[in-house]
Image (cartoon, rainbow, N blue to C red; front, side, top):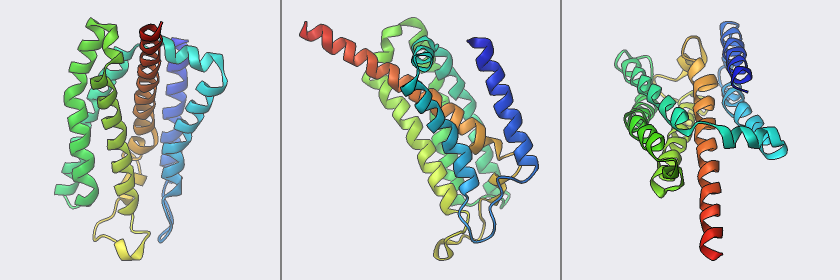
Length: 206
């Protein structure tokens, strides 16, 4: 399973890089960035469908190393690049500041969450763990939403600087690969949390 997962991730990343180099994620002027939306939402929807409809998907979720998945979010410190883009006049502040600060907050707390999970597997059933994952998902929703609004496809909201740079390599790998990948990590964690809470409820009523 691990080897298959690594191969899938490699193929996924290579595919996004190839599509990005061909300009497949660049939206036409005045149109919504549906290509980025598909790149972000498509993998998440496919993953949820796989988990819901197959035993292999459910088994994958149950076997996932939550400490490892939490630790992966430390890479979100790279969101500081959005602030560098803003400082150079390449990205709009409406997108760059919320996206960067949200990512940095999750990245800074990720090592603590990972250590707690490694020390005590039952931490995955706590409210603190659920809230951290919900905050991480909300950060992505806010960033994607503001990034979409900042593309300028709505004339009344057209910014002086748009987020067209996020539709091109190398930055396109963020919304089309890393964001859905880490969003899936959050969804795995939340499903495991919900399972632990249901188990605790059954024990308490037994």
